[in-house]
Image (tube, rainbow, N blue to C red; front, side, top):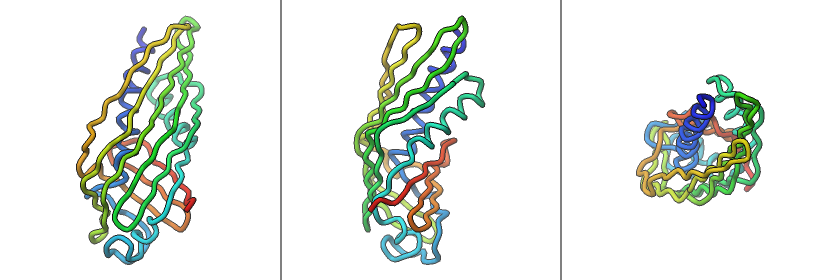
Length: 199
């Protein structure tokens, strides 16, 4: 079934995009942020703005996922999310803790309904600093797992996405921080994560 193949294959790619976002808040090519002080972490400017705890707008991510699939010809009719993702930043370390699930529904040919559930859970962390106008990362260690289940016409199967535990310096990311709002965009991803300061 062509539509089924497209959605299943697309979900695997989407998982990799999502993990690029969640395991690596930035790397050596990132850093388009607010503030004028480009010195090291904790010194003001974007570094000072980033320090704190941030809560991900998961439903906004879900909406972006649906738009992505619809634009690429996959008939996703709804995408919902539950759970939380928290990004905690101190003067030297970023820690990403995920316990979030997404449920996507699509209407296939012959009246069949496909439901895809994805759980992203675990913790990733790494060191960070600001160099010039760039946010740079080192020693990024991934502890996030991604589990998918697909149900079509009452028949279910599951698929796990394995991500390397050590992702080094991570993925280049654009960062914009302004007071209590933050956006992060991995350059290899079609999605932008929106965050609200909670601590």
